[in-house]
Length: 256
Image (cartoon, rainbow, N blue to C red; front, side):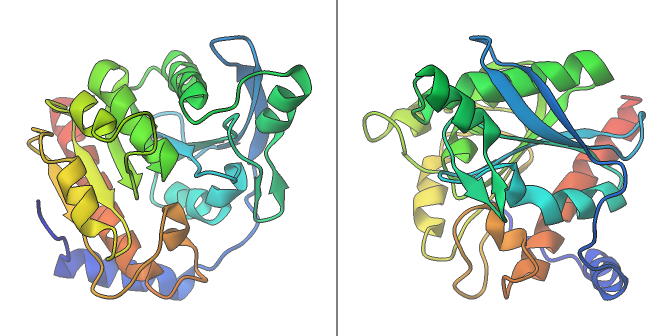
């Protein structure tokens, strides 16, 4: 595991944050597509350019695609297309209602954390077939664990960046056992208090690019650490973007 804080990235990010604040996204679009069981999934598409990498953004429990309103804007500015998805297990975030969860409740569909796995897979397939690129999956809390499980077996996943994954399903040891041998690039972070458990969770992941960022101070749970209202958001962004830029450079070198 490596703790990232590269000087050139720090300077770049400080310049970015000094000139760019949260604002409305011109061109973001609400879209729908079917999950694996045909439940209608609602998502927000943030385009940056047809030849740029694609990221699937997955929220935490009790949340919605609104969890990533700020993050998607910034990732667009860094040259990444983003799809923020409403999973069937959730509620609302930043004033945005989870429409997939509402539809699932109306139809009486199961809404456990594991039931949401098919929604993430459907999001990966949507991006892969429409943009002809492997997908970087970002997960938050329970969806972070699902992202790791899916990455182990899904060849359409390029890399994963996860916030506060844990043993949120079934028996203790389920996630760590299922992701043993995962070889795709992995970025993982959490609050400082969660860091030891996260390290143990990923102990059998064998990725050549396996990065854990541990904040100097308390931090927070899930991807909301990227919100501007969070005191350590700049440090988390520096670590995340260093990882994403590393993956992008590797793909550029390979002509992907």
